[in-house]
Length: 196
Image 1: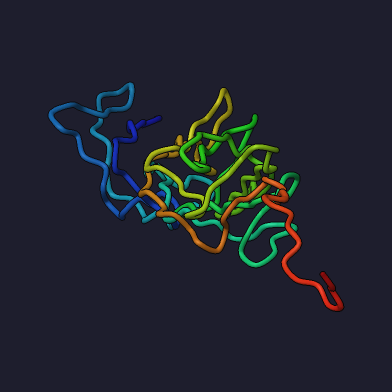
Image 2: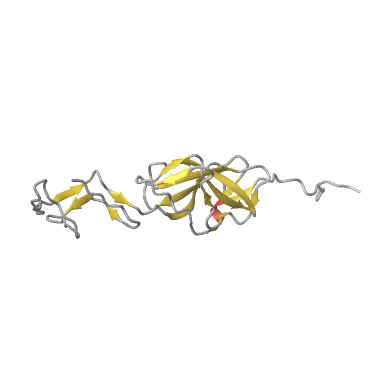
């Protein structure tokens, strides 16, 4: 005899499905042998079966933060420097493809590409500063700027991640200045030994 149960939204069992003793019920039906004898329904309990875990909860974004940069000097990035942003998920996830995270660099949207972290809860996205990028207040990240870009972010059970997240305000530790200083004026301001 086989029985099946449809997993419902919000069902969760991290230890594995178990069956309580004597939980078989006729529910208005009958179970008999070919001679018509009614079945005895008592049975032993079945312990948690870790081969059948239940997880219907989607992973969510716990936090987003600019975590490092190569080449940063005096809290300022230049062309070619690479900024890293860590998206922390509520549980370990698997990433396929190249999801993106949109950064606000001086009012211009720039895409940070997924770089690493599949199999963990910490996903790293990177962006190389381009010539012409400028941000005197520091890089910011708008709310809900994480996008799959044709990829996937799922947990071990295959639940697709919920991508919503809070905004990250201008981070003064990661300002951007790719403009070379220029000479604005040249003047003789004094001299010694000058005679009329």
